[in-house]
Length: 415
Ligand SMILES: Cc1cc2nc3c(=O)[nH]c(=O)nc-3n(C[C@H](O)[C@H](O)[C@H](O)COP(=O)(O)OP(=O)(O)OC[C@H]3O[C@@H](n4cnc5c(N)ncnc54)[C@H](O)[C@@H]3O)c2cc1C
Image (cartoon, rainbow, N blue to C red):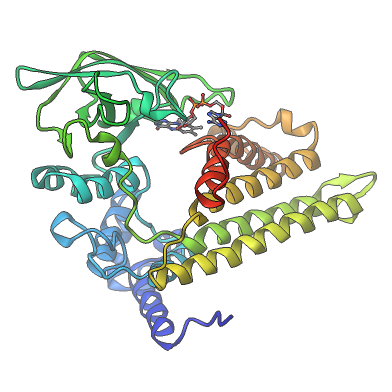
């Protein structure tokens, strides 16, 4: 296996590095002596954080480093697909903590869907402002009773006087209380077979027929919402794709380059902090890292991370050769969720009862000068909680296993 990038990619990495050197700086450098900044860095240094990030992103888009799969006319960087270049960009931007693409449902789900299936006016109206983070989108798929079996959605959409009138309930709607719009699956053809009677609509969340109720989580935060729709309305042409074809629209694959290596690097960084924890925590009067069981557990996790890394390289190679990755995407999600959960569980065992005392919400506690140990523990509480959520979000691990078994291995359906 040849893991070298080759001269063209090495030159590209140098190009990205010199772009970042000229246009971005660390927080300390931005706050420090202006004479030590480049003219481009100086332009950014006086701006508030949000505006600074936005201005930098615009430059990075113009250089073709961000939103590479989005055409320029909609505010993207418009480049030929090249996963290796995309990984180099991610790598280099992450190294100097430069702002990357805005993350969220809007950029990761809606934009690719609109580019593939949307009407021209929808692309013009929504794509650019979604990329810049001006429009935030909620994902209105799940309902009580329709999660894994998503095609059973019951929220009703009826066309009346040039508007869709929507009645029903969505649940688990991440950050709906902070979003401007929602893309939503509704049943518009009640008599059609279940996969064929669904439409994919766009809707303004700020209107009287919508009641958004944030759910209080055990972490104390309210990240998810219930969304009640009582004669909520959206114009007839705010439908993406054809009426009754919303299931296919919602399946629009993410055609943009995926971050193959980034996941492996993030896992390696979490593992490095887990090693630090094992060195700091005590077990039976000695640093936990000296305990044979802890060492064995760490070695097993490291094995998973290395396999994940090499599997990412393999996916990357397949992508570059335009080969179908088959079941890899499903396997990657499960492997990623499992390894994150294993790391969080070991951290939980190492920290012990102290973990119960560490509040997951950071913010003000951190600024009140809590001891460093507590800050570290808070990080692990967050990691533990999110590892549980990641095995459910975007399709549960059980469902992914079913897909691998049935479609990948050709095993018979179990039900
Ligand atoms: C962090 C997070 C963010 C989310 N954000 C959103 C969002 O923004 N918008 C949105 O619409 N939804 C969102 N969801 C919802 C998510 O998509 C659903 O929770 C998920 O699809 C599972 O559906 P469910 O909760 O109804 O569980 P169910 O489908 O009721 O499943 C319950 C259990 O039964 C198992 N199960 C179900 N069917 C089968 C089967 N056939 N074979 C084997 N096991 C099965 C499941 O694996 C699970 O363990 C989010 C979820 C999480 C955790």
